[in-house]
Amino acid sequence: MGAWQPLPDDLPPEVRHFVEQLRLLKDGTGLSLAALGARTAYSKSSWQRYLNAGQPPPRHAVAALCRVAGLTGADAERHTVRWEMAVKVWPRPAAVPEAGTTADGAAQLEAETRTYENHDADAADEAREGYEVRETHEVRETHEAYEEVPTVPWWDRPEERPRPGPGKRLLLCAVVLLVALVLTAVVGTLALG
Image (cartoon, rainbow, N blue to C red; front, side, top):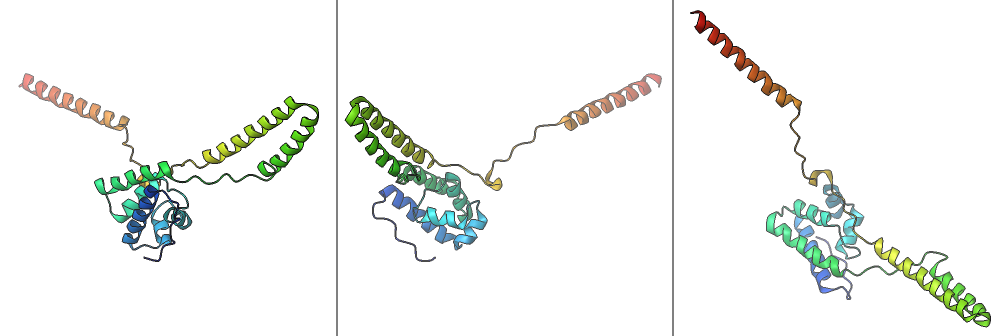
């Protein structure tokens, strides 16, 4: 519909192809991003990030877009397969250090190392190792926060079949009892007659 923002040059081909296909699918709906957000469980700003390759969409967002576009069966499945291939190679965001952690930690490490090197080489090594462990942990936390959190709108959830309640059993017992009464009446009438 509108002019799309150019995709970054360093995107993996699977991601580029997936986002281009999503854009075509979205354009085929004729909906604006705001209208698409209203028809799915994902906001306009979320769709902007997904369609500009800023962040991978959740699988359910792809399914919702396919549903809105009228795709079913194999056509919708193709988009799910493209999503799976793209998410595997989607570029991860760079670790952004929190205030007072990595940047300040590097300066602190340098000061600790200088102090320890003058007095104790083993303590300097321990300071370096402690810093590396903290830095590795911070990077790992950033990547773990990137994992997909699936959200399913209520209209896409599979319907739960109601379990037969006591009402059906009670009705069955009443019918059986009624049949028994009718048979008893018929047999009694025949015996008297």
